[in-house]
Every structure is written in C-alpha cells, then in structure tokens.
Length: 463
Image (cartoon, rainbow, N blue to C red; front, side):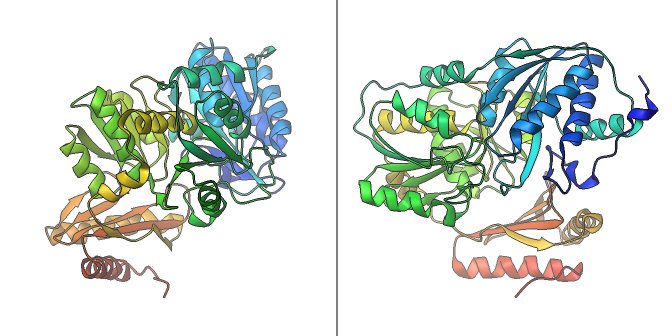
C-alpha cells in the first residue's frame, strides 16, 4: 500500500550484496531498523507469509535495533518470534525449525564494535542481491503493507544446543581442546556445548562483550589467534577452536600452534563427508587452493568451484544437491545431516568427530598436504564504479592470449606455475587477488603477471 508520508531513504552505503550493514550513529539507526522491518514484512506478506524469527548478537546496539526491527515487522502485519541473543546460526536454526516464513539476525559479524547489520532469510533460503535491493525500493516508495502483527517471545537457545549435541559421535575423549569465542555472540553457546562434550575443554573470552576487549573476533586474521596459540602451548592442548563475532565462521589451530586456513579446514571436513557419501559433490569458492580441488577429486568427490559469498554458495548447494561446501573465509555449510547453513559451532563438533573417529590430529593432517606456496589475500583500492570494468578488461586481454581462465567469479588464471585470481569485491571498493604456486620462483612469476595486468588497467599497486 503506497503511503507517501512513509517514504524512507537509507544511507546508500548500507545496502550490500549479502546483507544490510553500517556504522551506528553514522549510517545506521533505529529508524533504519523500523523501515527494514516494514519492508521485509511487506515482502513476507506479499509472498503469502506472516511470521518472522528475530535474533541478535552481543553488540551494545543490538537490543535496540531488535526492538525497532520488531516494531517495523509488527506494523506490516507480521508476527515476530523473538528467539533472543545468540550466534547467527541459532537464528538460522529458528528459521529452519520454527513455523516461520523468514528470519532476521541483527549482527555486525566480525566488524568493529560500532558496526551492526542485518542478515536475512526467506523460506529457509538466503536473501541477497536483488532481494535486498527490493527492501530499498519498497522503503523509498513508501510501498508498505500495513497491519497489526504480534510478538511472541520464543527462546530457542536450549533447543539449538540440544541439536548440536545430537551430532556428537563419541562418548569418551582424551582430547584437550582450547576454545576462543573472542567475546562474540557464540560465547554462551560455546560454554553450554563444551559443558556436555567429552574431553577437557579450556575456554577463552566466553563472556559476550560487544566492545571486544581482548581481541577482534575474526579468527582468519593471525593476530587474533595469538591468545589461542599461547593457551594451546600452556595447556599442551591437542587443538584450538575459535569463532568469529557471530559464530558462523570457524578458526582452527593445531597442537603445534599452526593455523589451518579456510580451504584446509574445508578439506579436513570434506574427507569426512566423502567417507559417508562417496562420489558426493563438494563446492568451494574461487579463492580456495588448487590443493583442495585436487584432493577432493582424489578422495572420490566431485569438486565444484563457485562464486565467493555465503549466499552464492548456499544457493549453489541447493541447485546441485551438494552435501558440503565452504569458503576460504571459513564459512562451512553441511547439508548431509544438517540444514545447509554456515554454523561454526556445528562445524567444530564435526571436526572433533573426525579426530576421534580416525585418530588423525590436525597437525598430522596439515603435514600430509601437498606443498604449495601462496600469497595472502591481496586487496587493491579501486572505485566501485570501476572495479568490475577492470576485471572485464583483464578477461578480454587474457582471452586474446588464449590463457586458461576460469571465469565463475572474476578471472582465475591457470599456468604451468600454478594460478592467480582477480575479482571485484561485492562488499568494498577493492579488487581482490590471490596467487598460488608450487615454488617461490613460480609465485614471483604469477605475481608479475597479475601486476602487469593491473598496470595495463591503471590500477595502482602499493610498494
């Protein structure tokens, strides 16, 4: 229903590819949350639904945003199931198991404490891209449904923990594990889960604190796992497990203090899935090591390379009926015995199952992998209006050279030395690149090829 007095304009920077997020008091406010609730409620109503689950993380701004979001949803005629504070996968669990038509998680994920945002689900599927733009369009035009919904307080924490514990396949354990929630939203769930797990468990930073006083909650960055590495050494632990700010990404550190990167974690878990489901399809994003794809094939699986972004991966899993998928960023998706969404606490249980079942430590697994040398993810500043054009220019030149290119997301160029990747970020004004080779000399050659292509398109490369 068009209501010109209800026209609402968001700060354009908060409407993203995979979610809605901004900086509290600068680009994101409670008024935005009300409008998001009204617009998403309108979409749900027009699709024939009328119930939405709402959860929130541990940031100081999250309870107020949850209240405002609920106000907007109710004003559009939607009944809200308030599932309380917890990690993002707890909200996904609600969206999959409660009688609702969608879900919204208020979370800033692994961003700084003054950031926050909204991750959305409709009918058990990721809500992203053009769907998020539709929220913006509805708000701008004031084209909201109106009604009087209801609010039902429906805590789901205990049911979520019980579901995680259903997956535990060992009754006894001599494992010593250190866990680090980084004061993020997974802290309480981590505490409840480990209290009922066999083995010895040492917990770090389990208290939920939206100011993140100890370290930033992003375990894919080495400096953020220093405390975990120290605790592993002090406790002579077998492994360490870390979570990001909202519990949908995992970090692993082995007994020797070495970090396992996202694609290594994926491979460890994929082999476990393939043991139960020989020949299954396993999806990984375009940033992952060639070692991952080769080893999945050797283990009897069908590796599929796909676009980076948790929403893209989830959609591809459904399309291909794949039981497992993952990203370099350590979003991991199980659909064999779980619901297909990214849940780091669930992934942690699966890691422990494999270690117990096979007697294989993370350190032994890491050392068994074929050797490869690679760059970290490299980021080059490039305007949003230019970044996709640069990738197209590079692709055109590579086509002229008849290069071996995979183009599912940017360009991934295979050479005798290895491969290099260039893609436009969907969330920032940057080009993202990565190179991997079998030798240091090969890596230098790949980096030069990448640099030459960027130079030809006028992209500045920092010294």
